[in-house]
Structure formats: structure tokens, C-alpha cells
Length: 96
Figure 1: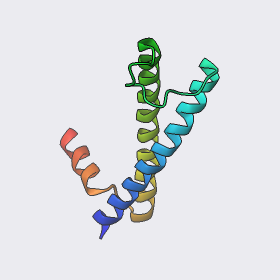
Figure 2: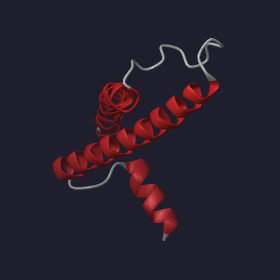
Figure 3: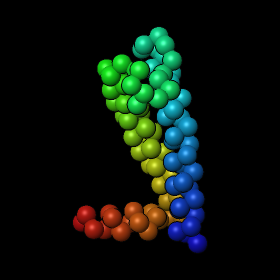
């Protein structure tokens, strides 16, 4: 049962992180560039410098959002169950 709860919690955290990341990326892009974020950075009509800058920004924001969401999900799981999820506990034990 614990493994299923962890998978659901982690999936929910990933979905929430992607929603937050998109909003932060769009807001930051609008603040910095003054325009809307590129709908499709792979479009050849988008300037390559703009596409690269957007890719770097969105990659950093997505990575940071997912890490923070997973940390919060882990804390919530650990607080409610009294232990880390099995996959994280196994990884922690392997490090030691």
C-alpha cells in the first residue's frame, strides 16, 4: 500500500510542478523580454538565440520545480508514514 501511495504522491507532485513551472517560465519570459514566450521554440521562424534562451530558462525552471515538489512530497510522505519511501530509503542505504 505504501508504494502505491508514494507513486500517487510523486505523480501529483510532478503534475503540480509542471503547471507551476510553465506559469513561472511564461511570467519570467514576459518580464525579461517584454513579449510572450515562444509557442514552439523548435519553429525555424523563431530566432535561434531566442529559442536557446527559452530552452535554458524553461529547463532550469522545470528542474528546480520538480526538485522542490519531490522534496515536499517526500517530507509529506515521511511525516505521514514515519519513514522514507522504499525507493528513496534503498538509495540512501546504498550511498552509505
